[in-house]
Length: 349
Image 1: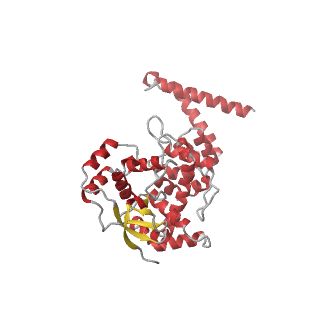
Image 2: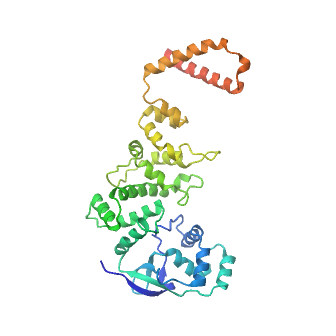
Image 3: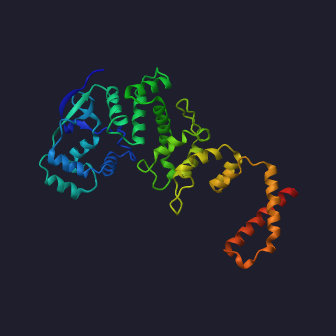
């Protein structure tokens, strides 16, 4: 591996690395993407620090050479954007008065910044893996998965899926299973992102909880439901079922709750093993109700009908005045009546 060279580079010759895991693009517009990145990364305090102290030479940007005069930043995009905005506040559309106030009080507005220049991205990935996956400056789960996906894309096509995973895991000092799970999870995430998060309100790259995908990948029936083969990358995701899964876990009702909570993912896996349970859950019944039908035989259902018929026979033993909630009690009785008529109709046919 060729070692990087240290170099002071003019800010104008450095471009933001839009493939960076830090920059999750919700827009194809560069200015809009940079604005989102600025807001998401709380850049004001960093701009104040750079304006006061300048760039630290012991923490250079990590870049690759595009040509002899231009460089793409692979790691350090946050510091680069802060420095670029100090030089040109019109790069973004927000907080202009605050930014101009910071600029007016700056002791230093850097024109050149220290960089470690790598020949190609492949050499960079090894160092970033140590730093952000297994090192001290770790990214969140989604950013790690994004980075591992970039590593995978840069591996030779002559290698098999398992060989690529083994090389990535070895190069950054992590487990092969972790790399595989993250790659598969990122593929699921990208399918959701490509479908605009199925237009679920307030769901986007910043609010999406990637750990829910990772937890679901541990569940055999959920993987089958989504069309995921955990042995290799698959392009056969079931988008209809993926949309259902996403809605169940991320779409909130008026009370701010989703149909399935994160700690109920294993219960969803149980439900997806049984057609009757799936039908019940998809028709609007609760997770508990759908789960309750699993393992019940026809005989147990008939015995339950007989048991509750005897209980209803004893109604005269109870005082009507002691019914705690008459309105809901009437609703339950009408539901029982409706269900009874439906069963009788089915029997008569």
